[in-house]
Length: 362
Image (cartoon, rainbow, N blue to C red; front, side, top):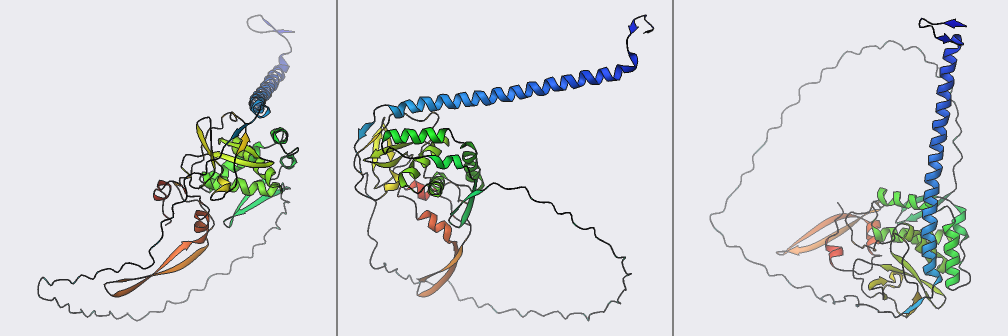
C-alpha cells in the first residue's frame, strides 16, 4: 500500500488504466443495451399501433355489409368530327410600297495557309508495368425478384412469399376477411416502401400507380378476385381510400376520385362518390354490397391529374404532319415517345382540366 501527497491511500495504482478501461467498457455495454431496448420498444410500439389499426378495420369487415345501387354516370362525350375539313380563305396581300430587290452578297472564301509538318519527337520507352492479378470477389447472394414490365419500363420488387398465401375462400365477405388477415400478418412493409420509391424515381402519378399495383397483383395471383383483393390491401397501405365490394361472388374495387369520371359505375357511400374504374365504359355491374368505414389513415382520393410526365422508357417514333397554307404545302416530321401515347390511351375520360393542365413532352 502507498500514499499520495494528500495522504490518501491509493490502492492498486499500477492498475489504474485497467480500471478506467473497465469502467468505459461497462458504460459502452450499458449504452448499447439501452439503445437495443429503445429499438425494441419502438418496434413494439409500431407493431401495437399496426395491430390496433387492423383490429379496428377488421370490425368494419365483420359487420353486416350494406347494398348499394349503381349509377352509370355521365356518358362519354362523343361529338362527331367533321367529315370534310373546312376550307381556309386565301387573303390577297395589298402592296404597300415599291418592291425591294435584295442583291446577294458574294462572300470571299479565305485561303487556308499551307500546313507545316511538325518534327516527330520520339517518346522514351516506358518501363513495363506488371499488373497484379485481380482479386475475384463473389457477389452476395441476391434475393429473388418480381419483375414488372409496363410501357417497356421494368420495376423490380424483392419477392416475399408470405404475400402469395392469401386465398379468397369462402367466396363471400368471410373470405375477404380471411384474405385480409393473411396479408396483414405477412411482411408487406418492404414492398410498400419499394412502391413508394418507384413513384418518386419514375414520377408516377396516381393513375400510373394504380396500373402498376394492378400489374403487381397479376404477378402474384391468377384468380381475378384475389388480384383485386391484393390491390385493395396495398393501396390502403399507401393511404388511398379504396374499398372492395361483392357483386354476387365477384370482387369489385371502388376508388374515391377527385375528378368526375365519365361512363363509369359509381356508388355514393357516406356522401362520397366511389368509382368502379375497372368497369369504365362497360355495362352490367349493377348493385353490390360493401362495408361501412375506412382503413385507418387511408384518406387519399385517386387523382387523375398529371403534373409531371412519367419517366417511361423511350420508344421514339416519327410522324409526318402535312398541311396546306395559302396554296403551299408544308410537311413537318415530329418525334414522339410511343410509350407515353400508350399510357395516355389507358386513361378513363375525366374532367377537361385533367387534360388541359397536363404538361407536354419536350
